[in-house]
Amino acid sequence: MDIAFKSVTKNYGLITALKNITFKVNKGDFILLTGPSGSGKTTIFKIILGEIKPSQGNVIINKTDINSIKKRQMEEIRKKIGVIFQDYQLVFDKTVEENISLALDIIQDDRQNRLSKIEKVLKTVGLLGRRYLFPSQLSGGELQRTALARALAIDPEMILADEPMGNLDEINSLKLIELFKQINSENNTTIIMATHNPYFINKLDYPKIEIDFGEIKNQPNQTSTNTGKKKKKIKIK
Ligand code: ADP
Ligand code: MG
Image 1 (cartoon, rainbow, N blue to C red):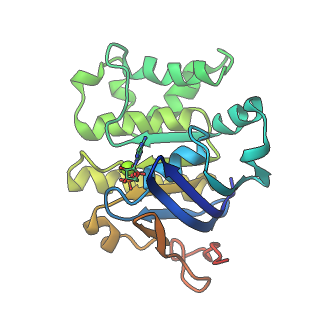
Image 2 (cartoon, rainbow, N blue to C red):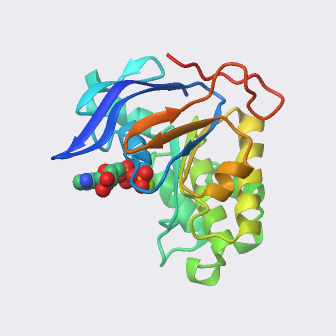
């Protein structure tokens, strides 16, 4: 999935959350969206998901301007995006397996092969043995990997991860990042991971879009590398 923001501004009343932002993310990119708390990272995700509209500017997803599409088309795009949050957002009275099944209900996945699909994603995140447990019985790392399995079940073209390490210790954070890396390189899934944590911002060698007070401070140039193997595909406009 390709995304382009073109001179996007977002005002919440008198608050300007994004100021004239322009960037591009290409299919297969793994991007860190960095910036302090309040800089506008979640606002960017909400715009991509169609939850809020830009006040000005254009957002192009897979060559379609989302300002000018019908609700139904936006829903189709939304079904291709897996989302992961800091606080997991699992349904607490459903098991791991049922949580994943709920996501498949939302995209109206037919019930055929559903169990094998669920097993496959649970295997990917190493949680097959936890399928019948409830969220209250899982550790933080396991909760977040359940959320990742749920995101993967819809076979996403893109994953948006909003501060996914926010409640995890270092070991579990690195394990999660390894999984993102694996998914990105095996499936060519576009991944945008938002973090304000300077430790990960410094440690992770991925192309970074840095924002501060709603403005882009820095973004990848064309000579840096993605995972070290692939040529990076972000372009500065
Ligand atoms: P980040 O995710 O980087 O922490 P956000 O995108 O959540 O930043 O917020 C950016 C700015 O927009 C902040 O100043 C925040 O207070 C403001 N903001 C976010 N959502 C709303 C809203 N619904 N109403 C008013 N202001 C908002
Ligand atoms: Mg945020």
